[in-house]
Length: 142
View 1 (cartoon, helix red, strand yellow):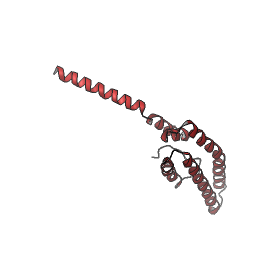
View 2 (cartoon, rainbow, N blue to C red):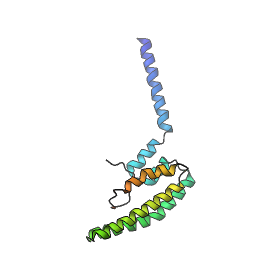
View 3 (cartoon, one colour):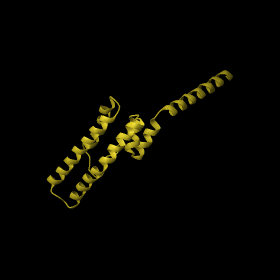
View 4 (cartoon, rainbow, N blue to C red):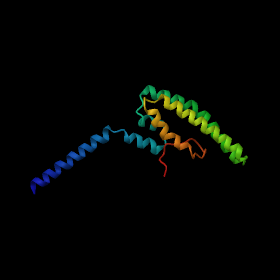
């Protein structure tokens, strides 16, 4: 019985150490935190392991596009508020989706080789049924 308890204690300690090492070297905590907080840039940096230079390029692209994105959202929301014709709202939403798709394509081109396609596979479905009440987020959908 004494050897069993010692063996059990050593096994539990080894498991705890292995878990601690895995947790410490894994980027998942940063990734989960970014997604939980809706921080798209932190999520992008953690998910695709961007270098400082890559992140700076993507951030500049994002900052430049955010003004245009805000204008699109404001135009759509204003049209909905004044109860514009459905065709007008649909045209504004189409323009928004096309602009977002172009932006996502430009971001994908800045990612490490092979990661652009994975990025597009993650973000493009989010604009399929997008409600145009603000920028898409990285928060997990229910």
